[in-house]
Amino acid sequence: MSGYIKDTKWEKSKMPAYQSRTRTRDRSNVLNRPEFLSLNQPFRTSNAEVRGSARRPGQIKHQQSQHPEYLQEPTEGGKDRRESLKLPEEDCMQLNPSFKGIAMNSLLAIDICLSKRLGVCAYTSSPWGSVRSMVTLLALTGHGITWICGTLLCLTRSNTLAGQEVLVNLLLALILDVMTVAGVQKLVKRKGPWEINPGFLDYVAMDVYSFPAAHASRAAMVAKFLLSHLVLAVPLRILLVLWAFLVGISRVMLGRHHLTDMACGFALGFLHYSLVEMVWLSSSACQTLISIGTFSWSPFY
Image 1 (tube, one colour):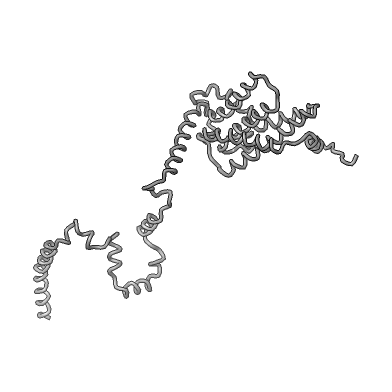
Image 2 (cartoon, helix red, strand yellow):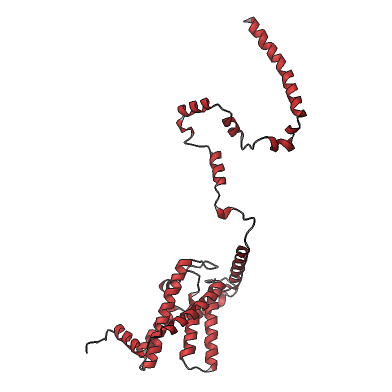
């Protein structure tokens, strides 16, 4: 026993000298300098992983047999590392974006900025909040419910076949415009620049989202339709075109639509007019539709 104690003391006395020689040898090694450590050592994420990798396979199996929840409940650090490695694509920075992506993002940013600047009647506290009621009334003149109800009223009071033909085709054009715009808005689901909740009439006309602008589409289609099928004086024609533009811009001033929504609405309105002109219903077809609508159709007499 005494010999064993002496040997242990001798080994302890020898350890400081051995450690000093090891440190001296490590300092003399060039590869142990900090600037060369990344060249001759693997990347280490944490001390816990290094200690875990240094364990023998027998010890790992023994721990797994004693603690089966060892692999089932990973640590929070491991979860954070795995989540950081699985970032979504939209959170990753694109180091080399395409020219098309840069152009589209720039145009969208300009569109949003200008639309917010033009939304001077979005709220009563806005710069032009005092004329908000007038702008709202102007926008109401381009509403789908207003034009559909007005066309039906004129159709009931019309006594000429030519007038009824024009009014029936206008009614079909209005219905086509409402359904098409509502379908596109449902697909795109773009919010307005100020994200103002739509009103009751907007829900009735299915004008809930921003793109495209339904009022602009309807105003452009109606103005083009009336200019083509009604004989109007030059001042009235100018006023009709000015009305269509003011109806479209009024929705931008109220904060409901972007400028691009208004522009696409005008283009869609001209497209609706072209489609109605291509499938123009004759006078006999219009009289048949009127008879069906008024429940006075008698084909057997």
